[in-house]
Amino acid sequence: MAQQFAIGVDYGTNSVRALVVNISNGAEIATEVYDYKRGDAGVMLDAADPNLARQSPADYIEGFHAVVAGAVRKAEQTACFSPQQVVGIGVDTTGSTPLPVNGEGVALALLDEFKDDLAAQAWLWKDHTAHREAEEITRKAREGEYPYLAKCGGVYSSEWYWSKIARCMRNAPHVAKAAAAWVELADYVPAYVTGNLHPDAIVRGICGAGHKAMYHLEWNGLPSAEFLDSIEPGLSRFRFTGKVVPSNHPAGVLCAEVAEKVGLPAGIPVAAGAFDAHMGAVGSGCGEGTLVKIMGTSTCDCMVAPLAKRLPDVPGVCGIVPESIIPGMYGLEAGQSAVGDIFNWFAKRLAPAEFGSGGDAQVKLTEAAAKLRPGESGLVALDWHNGNRTVLVDPLLTGLLVGQTLHTSAPEIYRALIEATAYGALTIINRVEEYDVHVAEVIVCGGIAEKNPLVMQIYADVCNRPMKISRSAQTCALGAAIFGAVAAGAYPTVEAAQANMTGVKATVYEPIAANVAVYAKLYAVYKTLHDAFGSTGFHGSLAGVMKDLIAIRHEARCGAK
Image 1 (cartoon, rainbow, N blue to C red):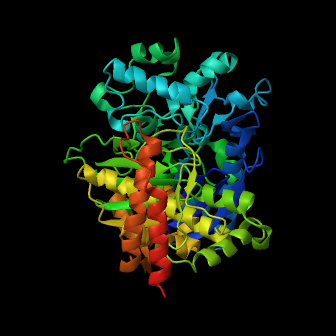
Image 2 (cartoon, rainbow, N blue to C red; image 1 turned 180 degrees about the vertical axis):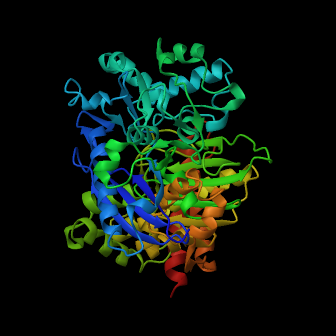
Image 3 (spheres, rainbow, N blue to C red; image 1 turned 135 degrees about the horizontal axis):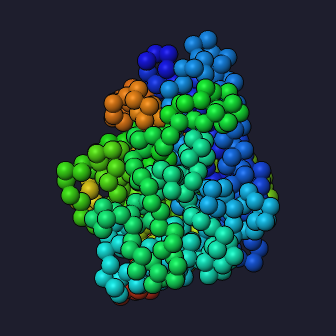
């Protein structure tokens, strides 16, 4: 096994990355990144509709060729590597990011007729144009007493599969008519690289099907045709057939045409696809009692629990799906629709010129914010700048900042925004623990965890738990590589592969008791605002919020003297 390798391919919001890994010890010997060429940093937007976010399938295909070929070339500079030693390939992607394909499985956007049509592109995970359709799916499931919402937190999201397809049928019927099927990006890439593109032959991953398309064995798979057609006549035409499997199963083998372009031999097993966060959880070494936070533009929180222990349905959690993360375990998913995006927004749009621009602004804002004590600013924010994914599941919620005065500074606001995302993280932890899913430890991965100690310390203090950091900076790609190795039979189980290929760094952010106490008070204010602006059943009062913040601010400032 010392001379065997796997490749993980990780499709993010703005780029795709390939990682070559030694499967005996998790050593990462080569990586390559491809920035999407189309749209704004890879995202196609519409000035008339801020909810719209699409991507070009051409970027996905060109990206796979570029990053795998580039990573293989770099790996060949290592004496122990040759392409013939690659035993498996895994793929993870954003989700829900479905795209329409024709009867041969070709993405419609690759055809001249549709290349400039936004509705024919991939509907990126953060596209919220289908919020009305999502509301309708939720309402009709409840009114008809259908069980389909039970495993996705009781509310269907505008980010997910069926709401987006229904939206396309209503707003771009010419695209829906031309589509023979819709395919999650996590299923499309493995289908493309294995040559199994025909809609009836595509292997669908349980991760995408279960978390986004309401697939569950308790109701024999997908929602019924009757239910789907009650949302939009003909929607049931897009119920997919074929295998639905965990990612330890192969989707096929690397086809000759793609193999030649990327410098690998044909016939390498390719694992069934899954979402980036779920494979990132595997790459972080997740197990029972461990919450893995994949922090980037947004966050996704993942946990596993044994199938032998039946879990209750948890309101507001994005999914409880058997084997969506680790085979033999339930996979639980929650998350926040914006985290890094909020920090980037403030630095790019609102930071004073004295802080510079882009990454420089973030560095200077972070340095200044780190000098502040918890509570010193007198500010609390709501982290809903891109809606709320968990636990409210409402894309029509927006950001909020309370407590500012004529003396409020940019670093104070920046820190309040970081704290707001930490409060959102704690809200998720509290919700799953209400339903007997204990969070014993937190492992964080992603660029923020690697680069920003202030964020990690604030999270440790707010959540009152140690924050560990995944050993790998490429946890999603590493998780994909692990599944590539397992699907190829190089390891008997995911857990066996994790034991050799994953770990955490020596640095651990421990909660600071004094900070924990202050943040408990601030979180109480956040929770009041959360419930008041986010739920229809709020019966409290906002009258004391500002005065509570002033009192916390006074104590923080005077207590430090």
